[in-house]
Image (tube, rainbow, N blue to C red; front, side, top):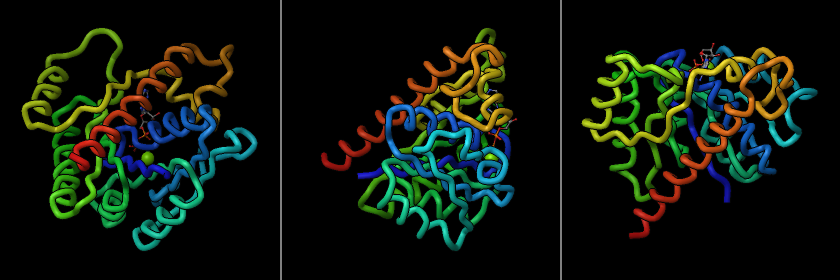
Amino acid sequence: MSTVICMASSKGGPGKSTLTVVLAGVYAASNYSVLIIDADAQQRLASEWYDPSRAPDTISVTTATHSTIAEKIARGREAYDVVIVDVEGSASLTLANGVYNSDCILIPANKSTMDLKDAMATAALVQQYNANSATQRAYGIVWNRVPPALKSREMDNTARTAIDAGIPIVFEVCERDAYRSIFSFSTTLNRLDKKEVPGIAKALEEGFRFAEAVAEIIVQTQQKEVA
Ligand SMILES: Nc1ncnc2c1ncn2[C@@H]1O[C@H](COP(=O)(O)OP(=O)(O)O)[C@@H](O)[C@H]1O
Ligand SMILES: [Mg+2]
């Protein structure tokens, strides 16, 4: 059975496309077949990032609009182990349809008041869909671009507000050059050149832990459904 993950936020820039490639790379390295559905009108993944000569063979990329996304996800479920949907950063039908048709919704957010406000709105959308269906979608915030060392007071406060609001926190991804480089070099983390990009090992290790955390919330949600 395949798993559909949607990177969802109604604002641009929190890291949807970056985290899509990070996860796709981890799954591909674990020999899963991966379909990335680029549902952003800018097509950053389909047109800019994807280069078949550089990306692993097990990753395919297709595009979708608000009217085709449900069908593309359904077809992706039949043919791939993992489908990752990257939507555009706006409160759109594409976002709503992507969320509706996915098993797991990851909400990337930087630890700022603005990003948190947006993340809470996206979480509320998932909660609303879950309240009206038998199958439950796993979901939660992925804090992104967290500085590896010192954290500001705003960051601490933002993190606390999310916890107080009861929104699940899936994982924290650090700010790293290696994550920027996957776009400059049109490839996945494990294929970056260690001589050209520093810190690949740490980013890779973080990517695998991120994928584990995602698997965990999916399993937890399924167990809750059964119970
Ligand atoms: N963890 C990270 N570390 C460093 N840079 C990052 C990280 N996540 C995202 N970025 C950078 O932030 C910018 C926005 O990220 P992107 O993935 O395009 O966001 P979105 O798809 O949500 O609009 C890009 O320039 C990307 O390289
Ligand atoms: Mg994007």
